[in-house]
Image 1 (cartoon, each protein chain N blue to C red):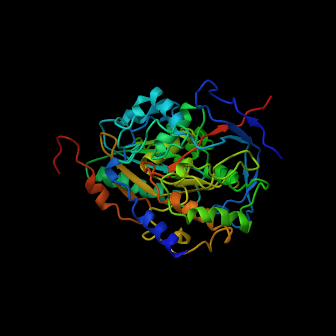
Image 2: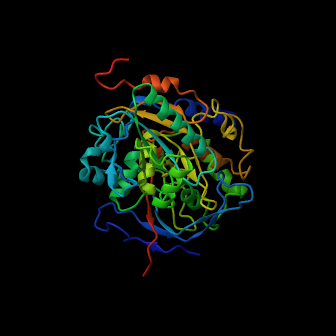
Image 3: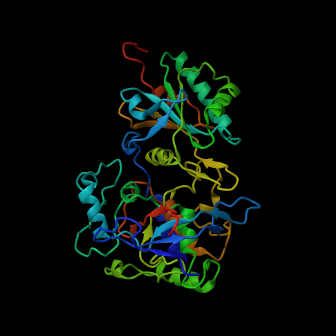
Amino acid sequence: MKPLLLSLCLAASGAAAQPDARNVRSLPTSWKTEAGKQVSLEAWKGRWYALTFIYTSCAGSCPLTTKKLKRLDAALEAAGKPLELVVVSLDPAHDTPPMLEQYRARYGLENAKRWNILVGDDAQVRTLTMLLEFKYTRNPESGVILHDNTVYLIDPKGTVHTSMSSLDQPMEAFIEAVPAPAGKKR
Amino acid sequence: MRALRLSVWLLASSAFAGEVVALPEGRFAPLFGLDVGQTAFPVGAFGLDVRPVSRGEFAEFLAAAPQWAKAKAPRALVDDGYLASFSSKQPKVPVTQVSYFAARAYCEWKGGRLPTTLEWEYAAAADETRKDASREADFAKRILDWYGKPNRADDLEQPGSPRNVYGVEALHGLIWEWTDDFNALFVSGDNRQDGDSNSKFMCGAGATGSARREDYAAFMRYGMRSSLTPRSTLPRLGFRCAYAARRTP
């Protein structure tokens, strides 16, 4: 068995992704905003934004992700470079408008206008997560979704500029990577 | 039980229209993914290509969707090996060197989708007489004999594993195949950096943490899938499509 295991390890280590190849606009995806409006990520073309994934009934890491996003949002505003946040639901069947409203209320996000929570269908979620190489899987019996915890900084072309863990990684480098708005020098 | 064969499920006019079989709903214990206390997952009824998608079938797709041609497919969706050895000669040989995105686009064009890993493993656990032979030593040995065999130039012309009890062929012994959620096993960026969420997949950890120690063949497949990105292409990596279950006449 040793040669088999070795080749498996080599295969695993040789497949590192090239970050600059990941672009959220490489394939079209279709979403609904909280207001019920149909939207694609083309709507954010030409702008920098942060993108991540959550689901509202998530009891595991999602509360941490949401709290970290709130801190990121506040820190970016304080640094004079506020960023729109695109938060995509991993659980479109259950993340209905009332659930999204409850989610906002739970985290004090009722007036967080830079937050855009998008809900699509499973195929859209699979397409977008694959473009980003964001991994998730749903337990078909319990409904629990295991998922990566990554926040992406998307550039105006749709390419991943950088990313950070939404859990334990410090966010200074991420904030540093966000360019100051045109006309404003830091 | 013989699976119902639906050879004219879709696109019967295609010169290389593959056969599709209907798989019944059931329950299956995949090697990974079950929580403590769970013994199996429900699998809904679905349709599945009898054989992997062939070069001839893929050539028809390329004619209909030229944006997926070797020279045109964007590097965000395929790596440099995409269709590198593709030729329309040998139209019955399985198409390989296709990325996940290309495979998925093909299945959508066909009116289907890629099978989920659960569906693929459910189908692939069957042999000629048993629905779930994955715990049987003779079944595992046949598959592992193939995994241990060096590649030969004419491998893609081989028939692969015989038609199983569901009517599906060549799930083993021919190529690796894409699944819709092939990367869904690692749930952290890198298990070396992010802690132990998947220490069972650290190299050399072996199959001890999985549901069935004896099913080393399935462990190899999960490891193989986890090594891929959606842009990856390999000379021995192809796919087949799944379809929504249809009420049969």
